[in-house]
Amino acid sequence: MAPNYEPQIAALVKQYKKAVEQILAELDRLDIPTLSRANSLAALKSVAEILSSLNDDSAKWVEENIPLAVRNGIAETIVALGVAETVDEALKLAKFNRVNAELVKAVVADTQADLLAVTQNVDKRVKATVRQVTAEVMRDNLSKGINGRKTMNRQTLEGLRKKLGDSVNTGIIDASGRRWKPQVYVDMVTRTKMMKATNDATINEAIGRDAYYGKISSHSAKDLCRNWEGKIVKLTEDAPGDYPYYGNLPNREIFHPNCKHVISPVRVPERS
Image 1 (cartoon, one colour):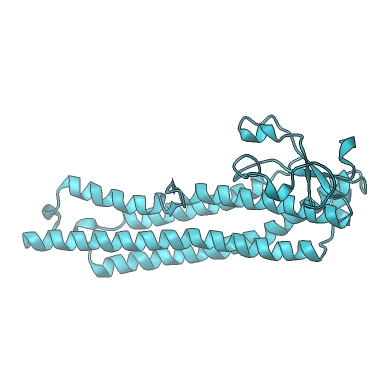
Image 2 (cartoon, helix red, strand yellow):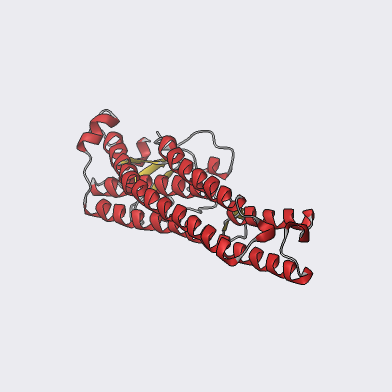
């Protein structure tokens, strides 16, 4: 059974939503027609403080929840192999072996780096946009020789406000050029990291208990995952039998970002 991380992920996403709202409110307070470098620097200082606080909170979240995902993977293995009857019993037995202890460290560092990249990207885009808007305002005022509200028409003002909002709301651009709202991207990243941590811990624990095969879970998926549901895979490449190796599975089809499938270890695949 796939673990449910929705409450934990929702709590983190809520923090990012709140930070985005705070940054948008800060930018909305800018008096664009009279915007000066001093005003923009003050706003950027406030934005930096919001993001710094968010970084601290997200780092704590990762330190608390990645070990939870790894422990769940260990517990599911203990139940699947018949060492314990329930997950609650298995959690009492679950201990980090050396490989899973290293897994926790690696996933914590990797996830924190991904979340830090989110805030750094937002910070960079907001800074660049605020500076650009400030320069445009100053040029507009200079060209008219007046520094007042009447120097900027409504269309220009709305365009500059949209630039400021877009710098936050489309703060993430992935390798494929897709634009993400920070909170949506964080939801995807943390969901993917936690499920992968669970599966990796399951595999590590299974191999440590001499179980070298796993069965992919089923939940009537509609995408390409459906072709892999219920399939047996090798957990280590040199295990006997004509089964696909977990490490060679096409991640466009199974165990992709946001994928909910998990591995359940088995000792003898013919019996599964």
